[in-house]
Image (cartoon, rainbow, N blue to C red; front, side, top):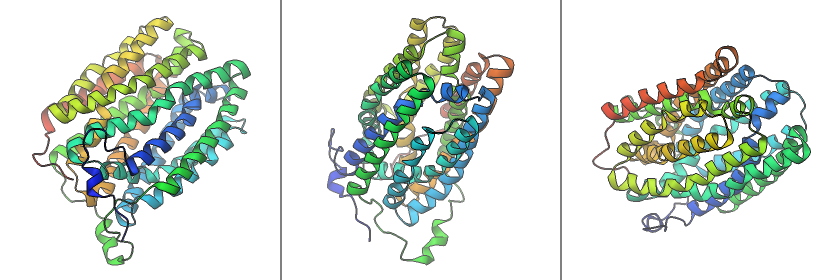
Length: 408
């Protein structure tokens, strides 16, 4: 039998959920996220500098999304059959190698190939998500998820500035490669923390009972309408974000004319804005997750159009912050509402199904966004974002309902 997080720890009020697994995940995510933040804001610029284009960037991102999606489904089965911890630890160490390899390659094709191979590490995502929601009581689930994400991301707020400083002083190529070495070091520290302190949350492991494997490999034949509509709306949001995510920095650089340090400032302030997740999580738990999600997506939808109208650093900064202020509440509310609708014993598989649909939606979004950006008009991906978000709002309003009794 696996070790289990105690019910006592899970039912603590206030910020009491920052114990046990939640503390371990918060610390390890903060360390790894800081390292990843050194390079994440500049991947698109680096890829193009190596000889890639917006279209090949979209192709690379689409391939990583597809590979990651396939891994999500397998990872969900593993999380519900063997347990959560083992796969999380293994992939944490797996992720160390890729920043080191990014630091030495000099061709965009190799960069793309490594990114695709790195996507196999997504196999642990369902287990990681299940570990989090297993360790937080249903009554505090949204604010718990939001608080975890905020605490994990606080050190990341300064990372783009440090990455931008390295690029400004050493050039795009050498500065990015130096940042990759720091990223590899933080990934190792993060993996070591998880290895030492993370505990299992699946009450009964099925790994000693092979007859259970057939049952675990099955998804429910009929999901509740609210859960299906919820995942479909999230897939549309993923498609929308895929259409623009890799192209913000390219638009800022090539159209608005921002420097790497100016973009670093915008990225850092956006990350700092994640503190708004905590009051957003409190509002979701008090007034309803579905309502907060509707308001978040509806107000976020037109922001990308405003971004295309920006012609200076201050205008781009204002719109970027508006994107955060309006859109930051959606993610924690979604994760909590999905957990409310999903029994614990199936949470890994349902999470995998959600992440699979989101990943497969991101892939065409990035491809279409890259094509529109390069071959038609660089503003069109941002208009596409707005349309997809409005369709997602329609689904949330008319098809999604919160359960009367939440799953623990």
